[in-house]
Image (cartoon, rainbow, N blue to C red; front, side, top):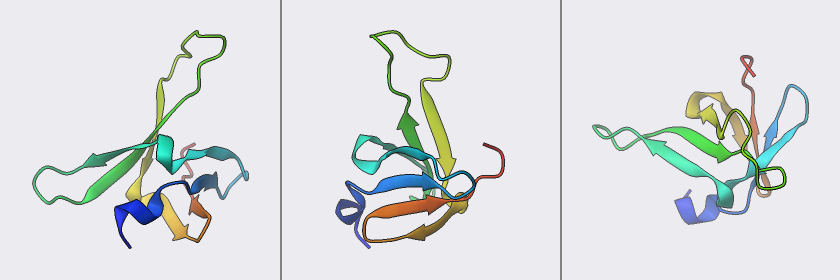
Length: 79
């Protein structure tokens, strides 16, 4: 799968069915040595222009369980 094919997919938490964001709004954390993707960095939306305590949610690549045609399912027991 190419990175361009991941764009626009919704990221869903398997544990509670929560929608975490859309991959087009997400940054990738890449290991400088290997070039492998380490994590997805999903920005937390602002409420009336004010920042929340956490500015982004980090989803480690190892927690991704399935990449489908429309969504990415993650299972992160620490969330």
